[in-house]
Image 1 (cartoon, rainbow, N blue to C red):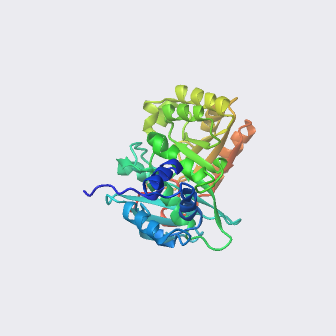
Image 2 (cartoon, one colour; image 1 turned 135 degrees about the horizontal axis):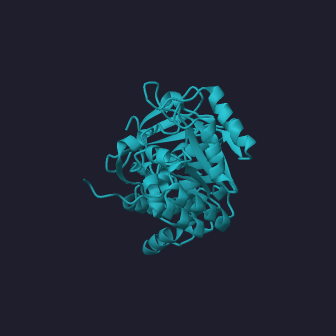
Image 3 (cartoon, rainbow, N blue to C red; image 1 turned 60 degrees about the horizontal axis):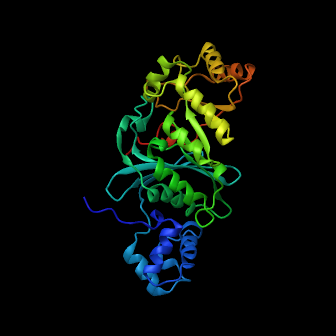
Length: 345
């Protein structure tokens, strides 16, 4: 295997300033360089037309511009886009762009190649874990989509709901969010960036101490330990009686509401009694429940409930004073919806 290149998006502002000092260049040029990388949708160092040609050549010799290489892209009937990327070591990941009628699109970002979670209904979980993604490999997924938007469109949200468990790759994910949030970087507000976890308690506790304005979504899928351990194997290590108090502490320490993702599977976790158990579990917690109907393929054992069952489950939660919404799944026809990434890697 060849040695990993250093990518421009690996660098923080301070690291780039240090590099410029070694090249006998003024440090103020670091922000100029990053404006081309993160905001002006450049595709190579040669595009940096306000930098000396000699400096552009030095940057080209020292750094690699992008860490993701498009292998395949697919377009959904609803406008969603999914891309299969190859990385420097020939590993592959998928990412998706979810459109908005307001032109403020969402990028669904991957944080690992595969996932160790092993959730049986998830295509990524069925891949197993390969490795963590680096800072550049996370940021460059966003930059890829940003560079291909039409006039008047922009990236309005970034969600770490792609391949992998973000909180198991804590340092790289947090440093990537720094670059995506920073004024010298991509410049997206922290409140528009959401980390999704299967319930990684140490990561949630660390995140609470960061005092960031990032969103936190916890994949719940069941309100009792026996069923949740089957759906989300991480529950065996971090069961509900430990997870829910940690989420409550997160709310109090961060001042941010937690979202609980609840994917509905026909005949598994969609009864009214299970809705009541969920309401009891979350009683008194400042949270929001996001209901998702299963996106598994037709021949899967994990089938979606009927529309009537989904709405009855939602209404029961509303009657029990739980804030709840139904998520409209996008990109199902191209395997870009929740739980589908990784099918083609």
